[in-house]
Length: 254
Image (cartoon, rainbow, N blue to C red):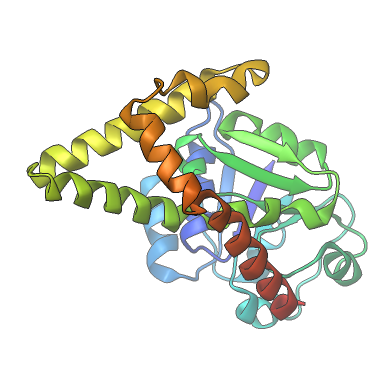
């Protein structure tokens, strides 16, 4: 199966990196834009080649659309897909009904990857379930086949990435304020958060709710810090911000 990518930005590049890490890496053809990224990918991977045009990529068996929404019309002008082809859109705001209306003969779906796919880790979401897409990406992280298109972004949870690193930076700054060298503060925070994430990954669903209590002692620092943050409403803020921000974004995209 030949896989094509129209739009070779950061996310497309991450998906290609992940695919090329598979034991049986697929043959991939990428669009010429962006030039720097498409050249870099075709140079790095033996099974990736750079096409001369988007129309050439569109002849592949499975085609991923990875351009920005404002570039969709220009990139896809004059391009059609037929029976037997699979089209997976990674374009924000390009709904399934729009995709089906545009290419009614193709098998279509939406696919939302995150940067960790390059290393075979992290969540991905798709709708509806296209067997070839599910089989292809199953080994490259945690693939969620959602029951409804509206759940593809998981209520905005995938918009928490930069916020996580801002929190990480704040903890590093707190360590430095306590007199630690920056390298030690950074190393400790990264190790600590990595340990906690690994513990959560390894914890069975039935025991997940006990993680909070298991990671604090009565009257200890962990409990006292958490209590202060609870009192300040700190844990209510993410949900409120996500509701407000994603609601505005979806209205804008619609």
